[in-house]
Image 1 (tube, rainbow, N blue to C red):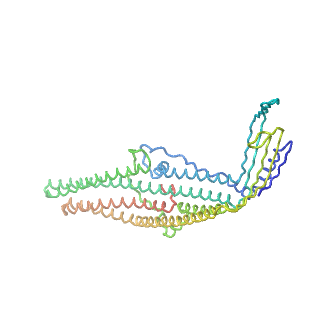
Image 2: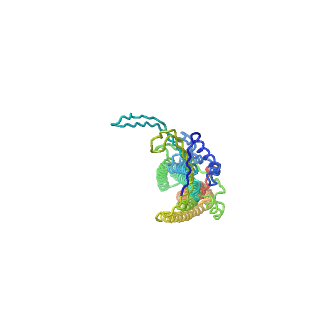
Image 3: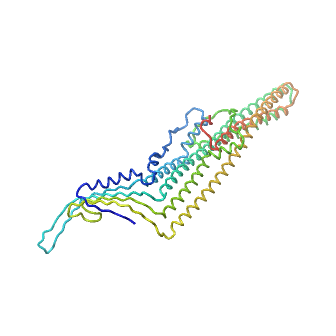
Length: 470
């Protein structure tokens, strides 16, 4: 249904359209949302900050700097940023539906009329025509509002997905970094064990030279030294492989020189000390993957409202201005100005059940989103429980490994003295030497597992911050 009023005015017709626009602006699009949209502002700034360009030559690579490099070079993080920009633009598209569509068409026409076989002379007329139109949807039973809210929810989901991607990258960097640091510390332990084995061999040879020991002691010490050398060679290969993996995770050129810390400290933090229930509650409320899944459910629910509104009535305001003619027609022979203003009410009567099936499809999409939320929640909480168990185990092993190392070191020193004094044999010394090497390995592994486990727990819970990497 439509109602139109056409008026012809010799002067001032453009002001009719301008007055209509002004009244509609005061009415706020007839939806009550115009002011709210203006207050929403533009989509948030989603540009990535400054990134480090390369490794700092000659400096020790810290975990925090390694994270900066990985986040700047990681393709998944860049894709997530691009997804945010895409969703921010979609919010702008949804907001645009609240505003009118204005268009102006101006043309210059030449009309020539000839009369062959007649004495009437041909005519040649030149004139200018101007067309202006305004179309403004005033009411649509919540369709635009639901689309706008759905776009906002998808933007929130994209932002949360970006945060979840960052947490995943952090977890990968932490694992690769501590694997490399552990491999380096293990290599240092193997070098130290090789040095101790060399000292034992020299001691056995001195005793043999003075007739205090048989040649068997030197042979057994030589075997222990060769075994230590083999273990040092294996540790060297493990370090090179761990560094190659770290280079790949950081996204730096292959062959880049990476200098890592020579040792691990045993700093203890509150991470891993809270009970499991507290960690699960924290994850439930703040993990970005869960937040993204919830936002996707909200967007799907808003889409149901938007699709349902497509089958409802709409109210549109239209206004047009014509000067010296109408669209797709020649210009008028007389100086003509015309303006039209109308309210159009459209009531769909039958669309072949299209709206019904679209609504059913949208409702099915809601069910899919809800199941994806449940799946994401279960997987995330399971990862937190596993990381919590690892952190607890690693925390308990720190003190045990320290006590083991002290005991093994004391036993080695005692065996050395006893062997030098001739009150013990080479077997006791070699056993003490092997026990000390194992204790050093356990100490290094425990420290690396603790630092890695506590940071992986924070990443699994979705609360890892750069401050935690210091």
